[in-house]
Amino acid sequence: MIINNKNLFSVSFKSIVEVKQDGKCSPKFFSIYLQTLFEIISYNDTGIKINRTKIEIIAYADDFLIISSSKYSLQKALDLVDKFREDFEILFNPLKTFYIIFNPSKSISQSEDIQLKLSGLNIQIAFSLKYLEVELNEKNHDRKHIERRIKSSKKIFVAFFKIFDKIKTES
Image (cartoon, rainbow, N blue to C red; front, side, top):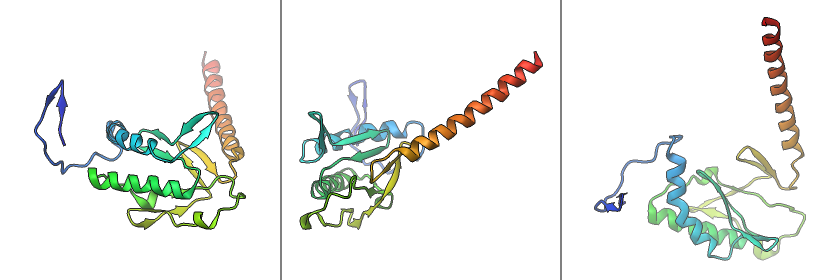
């Protein structure tokens, strides 16, 4: 590791201290650290095209999604993640890593019937998962998510109404 402070660089050293889990700066450090990985993945054969825009990765703080149109190219991206992990001594938790197939009604060819792996461990398929509090599911429907948001909004509205009613009666 080398530290840069106003273009003054430290000597190279090995860090034995991890970034604090849930620390205020942790997501920023993680994002800066992984920018190189995101660029490596972007230059490879991954991603999908939506209206002439190629999307390979969606990232926010220390959460990221790798987008792929096939399991084969997704495994190639996971291999890049694994090499990056080895080179930069980063720990990714394969037990918190899942994949989801959107629109599974499209048949998967025999060559696509592979077991995805990260760090030598199998990655489990998920039929739904949450990313940044948004539920993603294999059918690509957002009905459940919207229903929960509406229910939550109604609770907040009722709480505000009670507060305003209390203020009104106290005046």
